[in-house]
Image (cartoon, rainbow, N blue to C red):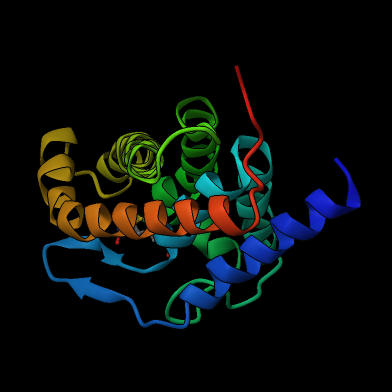
Length: 187
Ligand SMILES: O=C(O)CCCC[C@@H]1SC[C@@H]2NC(=O)N[C@@H]21
């Protein structure tokens, strides 16, 4: 990894942290809030690709672990790794990686803007919703002792907001592709 790659990952780590300034929205029926930070996770994947996107999230997780209040609502510290939200938090790592992996393979420089945007949107949905929820729901079911079905049904409340985030991430991915392409090209 080059210094430039590390700087780019650090930049997106900062974006994920900055999105944490928006306060979390607590839902009464599930111990996981709606937050804007998963938008940053999707954007890291679509803009930087799999490896650098995952490293951006890794930087955030290290900051959380050393106690900095970088999660929405000013949370941080090792307690964040033993909470009902922990599956989603760890899942961010895989979400950014898979989002970037899919984007690298679906989106090509020679495609039209619409096709690129759709590719980024699909990548964000696959990584930032399907993969992320798999981790989040499985862990939530165990941590909250509610069973998989209840954790799954409760988590469906996040879908509308996360689909909007995927759309915003897709627009961001496309805009960066036009102005300053960073996504690694893959066959
Ligand atoms: O702050 C944390 O400790 C992690 C919060 C995870 C929230 C998850 S991410 C996917 C889903 N969409 C949301 O808006 N909230 C949950």
